[in-house]
Image 1 (cartoon, rainbow, N blue to C red):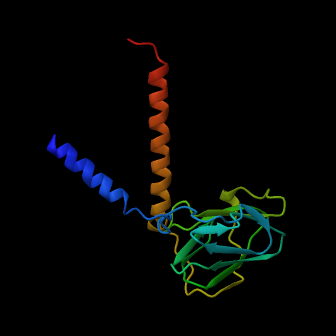
Image 2 (image 1 turned 90 degrees about the horizontal axis):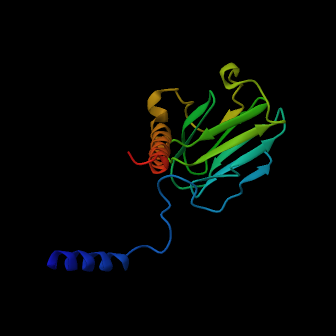
Image 3 (image 1 turned 180 degrees about the vertical axis):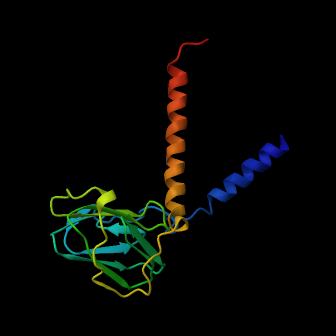
Amino acid sequence: MRRLIAAAGVFAACTFFVPSSPAQAGGGCHGSGQSSGDGTTVELAMNCMNPRVLRAAEGTAVTFINRDQVVHNLFGDGWGVEELPFEKTYTREFVKGTHVFSCTLHPGMVGAIVVGDGIGAPIANVTPVRQVAASTTTEANDTASDRLPLGLAIGAAAGVAASAGVRRLRAQSPAA
């Protein structure tokens, strides 16, 4: 009984020291950025892509700028940049189609560029387009370790979905 009371006291004491604002580290979008917009710029701010979906005209260069004081990276379909420090930019032109991208350092920090009507060649047939300009030091090497955090996040989500599906099937099946 004493252990239970002690544990309840520690729990109650800890609740007084919980920060009142959400943590700004880790993954996901913690801010209230735009969900979509037209233009040529995507800002990485408050661990969000802003806008998360950018519509751009064909032949337009898109610029990514890091407004957070932490380093982000960007990886998409056949392109990437390993480090995008605070206030640095990365600019590239995208072919017609829909191009998803993410910061693999912060799972849940994702976005998409929709060029033209968004219908383009299948990803398997997309060839990299020219890099317009970059203020970062290196283009990313496409290695499995670069995508590890995103892979872990996707795997975790799939595991949770599978577990929920199994529980639902068990609940619906007649008792043996």
